Length: 190
Image 1 (cartoon, rainbow, N blue to C red):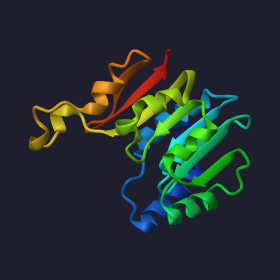
Image 2 (tube, rainbow, N blue to C red):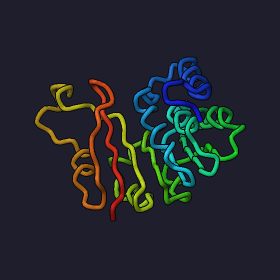
Image 3 (cartoon, helix red, strand yellow):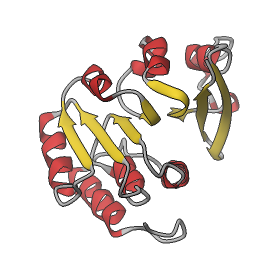
């Protein structure tokens, strides 16, 4: 396990891969650090990620992954999935899959689920809650604080926040990770 103040070599490799491919949708370092902290508390559990991308978020998780825990990440893009498989080929407790995000559900329930890619956090939030163990966490990233919304969004409600911050089956909070980026961290209570 790597200290949170260090950037683990596997994170550096994933960031380098993203830069080479000019992939701009990788997790922010601040989100990565939060994933690292959450993962470090799971000593025997199941962790999942929807949307591997180039493996940056996954690498933050792997950098804190306990040997008795398992991490499964899934990516719908064949080329990216193959690259992430290569990135983690030497990790026996890491499974990088090619497929639709729903394919990840066969590995549920999760102690931690990072709903990064795709539309699952908006289109099927109940399914994601059901994929968590009681007490399990879910992290949703890529949220823009309201004061930074573009003019065409003003006066609207955010359906992601409306659901995730109000559903009775979870306890949730929004955390600002940078001035212009926030995440929702929720835990299943029912």
